[in-house]
Image (tube, rainbow, N blue to C red):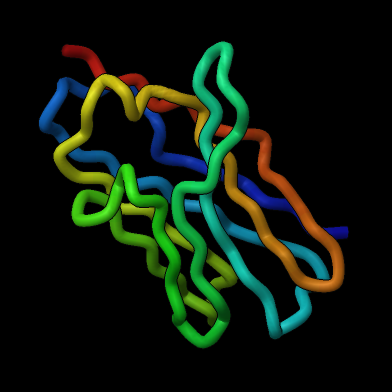
Length: 114
């Protein structure tokens, strides 16, 4: 059983920064993709960024240049550094791991005030 535990969300003013972390535990296939998705009220869940176990990254156009995804394979942890936050970044952010199966974290709230 794989568990994903997120941390680092909170309330920040526009222009500020936050760093999200997601630690995976359990039996994890070494070849995998970890990532972050987000869901704002009344909107569908959308991709934010992903990173493979080899370090290849993919970003949504809306956050390019502001957010950076990274991972520590030894710790099975993925990070999302979010800079220059905007009110439209307000959402619940979910950690995701795709290997043999797909797994989701419980989500962490990020609120950006104007």
